Length: 234
Image 1 (cartoon, one colour):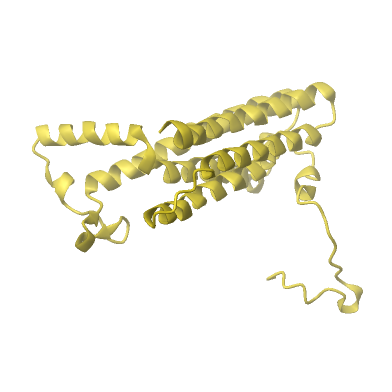
Image 2 (image 1 turned 30 degrees about the vertical axis):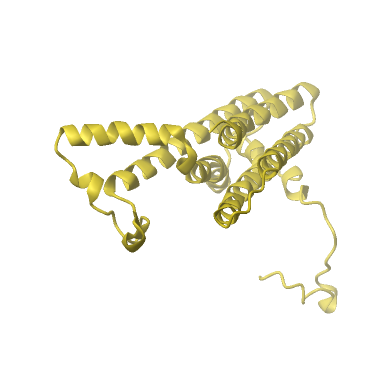
């Protein structure tokens, strides 16, 4: 289905109507502690992929930690006469490879890039997973159900990361958007509040609501802090 809408009204079988984008999340079945495996993988992809891998991929070029790690690794390789890792371009089909523009990833660049993204995915994704598991235990539900409430925040995070490419190209043309960073952080904060609101409404009991909302808020806090570092500190 390409969702073209042409089937609307066909023999009264399909009817298009406005609906809230929250509907599928708020109407999730009350998952048992033993959720089906197919329910777990989307939640893992959300935590470790959209909020972990994507964050590392968007941030590595501005991260002082990446630069510091590269310097330490370069010194270690030079001391052991392994200079080829600093000079030899990596796989052209995997890393940036434009030698005519003096822009080519060496094996050191590529290896550290993959390591940085992987470490970010493990740290951020692990933090989110831990917060959701703890909140789900207190709220009496399954963590995969709470993970779905992070969809607005994860979507905003990916959107903000992709917008860095646009503003970077504009900066290369001499167009500076000074308002972009505050707007991005505001968008992320609003998306985080939306996710917390979904977690609050997903559970019915008062005490469980607080546990679910607090867990989702803590889960979103680390990625939000990382974005703040990139926009205003780094």
